[in-house]
Amino acid sequence: MSNMACSNTEQHEKNVAMAKEKMLSEREFLFLAELFKALGDYTRVRILYALSVGELCVCALAEVLDMSQSAISHQLRLLRAAKLVRYRKEGKNVFYSLDDDHVRNLVKQGLEHVREQG
Image 1: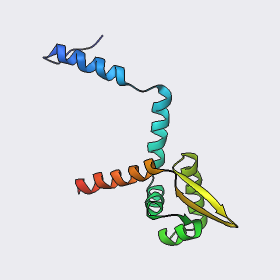
Image 2: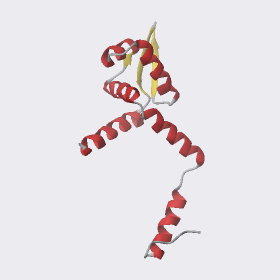
Image 3: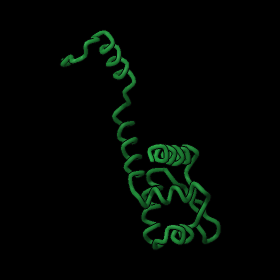
Image 4: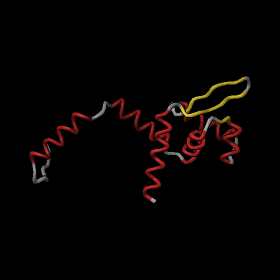
């Protein structure tokens, strides 16, 4: 079944067996791909970074990012669907924040990786 190009076939077989054992389910791969797809947009990453500093309303995000409120709202809908941001209402105001510390860590670690490359 495999086309062996490795000289150490015993180690090759161990590596293949270990990788196969650790593979995710189809569902997990699909959700992970959707997560990275949501993160793969310039504007959405800017929104996530702004929210990593603190909770903001749509008008504040629009001002920070120098964009229209409707453009921000559209991206926030996508980020909410991906469970990357959440919102809370206070009267007529709606405030957005990162969904949890996992999202904060994604932003932080991604930035650290980028800065190490530069």
